[in-house]
Image (tube, rainbow, N blue to C red; front, side, top):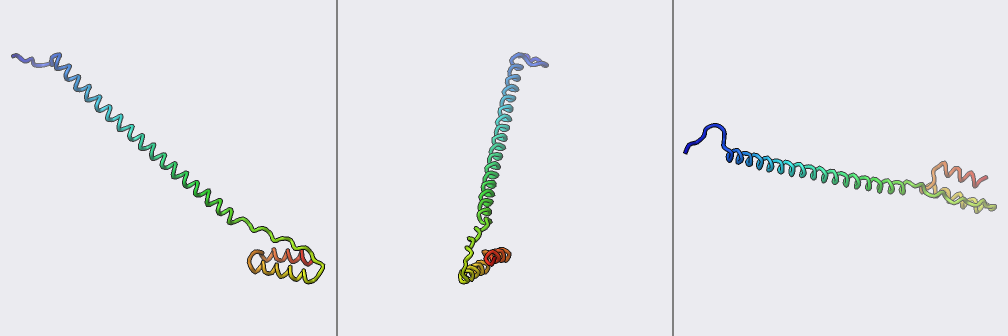
Length: 119
């Protein structure tokens, strides 16, 4: 049988075209799957970062609420009624002194309450 030298025949050209097309399709599908996996991983990482950020914000809010509750000033002591007798005045001054020693009243608050009692 004689072989032709030069250009391939019709069947050879069709076979070569089929191989090239099949290879291109396989490579294209592989590249597309790889890109989809990368996008999915990026999405998952973004969701995880958002969840961590939300958890950090929740923790910070809880700490702020706890600090605000702890830092709330104690209620002011009840105003002592001005008594006409000396025994009542002495008892009230002793109560104020005890509150100051316990740290409930500052020196300025003690002085102001004492001035109100004595006036």
